[in-house]
Length: 103
Image 1 (cartoon, one colour):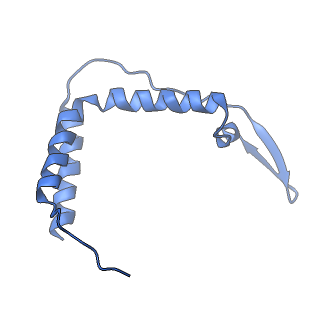
Image 2 (cartoon, helix red, strand yellow; image 1 turned 180 degrees about the vertical axis):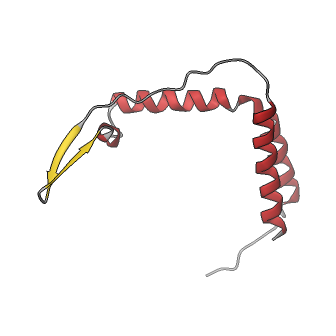
């Protein structure tokens, strides 16, 4: 129970830190292009604008995911010191000699 409260407080602090950040830098988020694919399955016509994202080996999908990852890294860069502090606190509270029972 204490761990749930602890992590809830931590997530709240991260959210509050993001809200209180008054930087006016505008970050453009990537928009996935719509490529409509229509399929007929069992007599039902299904239309999916983002079916192309299923092909994870595609160069266009990898490029789009890289853009999303760059956007997230740029958006969350203000919380880097907070994340490092939280990580160090969790490591300090963790018993490194902890062993699980063999099965």
